[in-house]
Structures are given as C-alpha cells and as structure tokens.
Length: 71
Image (tube, rainbow, N blue to C red; front, top):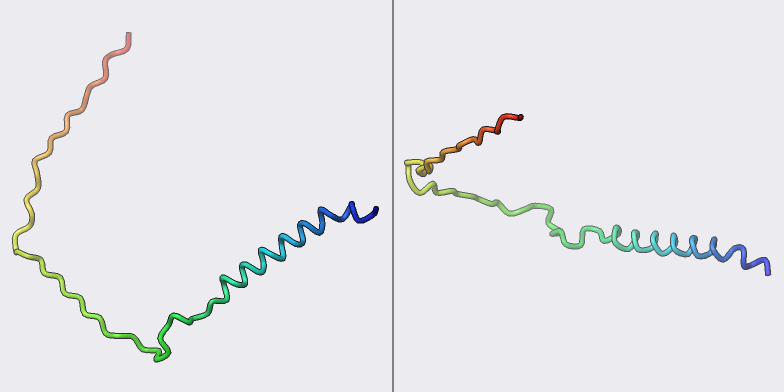
C-alpha cells in the first residue's frame, strides 16, 4: 500500500526520461547531410539592374484631419 504514494513520482520521472530521450534523439543527428570533402562550390551571383534610370515614384499626398475643438 505504500506504493500509492510514489505513483506520482514515478510518472514524473518517467516523463522526464522520455523527454531526455527525445532530445538526445533529435540533437544527436550529427552532420550526415554535410559533404565529406570539407570544401564548398564557388557560387557567383550577378545582378542586372535592367536600366540606368531609377523607377518613377508615384505622387503621394497626405492630408491630416484637424481635430474638432472641445466644448
């Protein structure tokens, strides 16, 4: 009958063991996806501006509403 007092403790410890096991499983994946050569490819990026003139900006006007005076 004294085992009934420890059931909550066993449940908590069991949950912690499962959490630690899952963390170990996901964190210990290693570098399996990395190439074994250690060197990477050379990547070259070229950006073509398309023209020398900047894009036209639209005319924008902002009108502020004035608050009505308090009575």
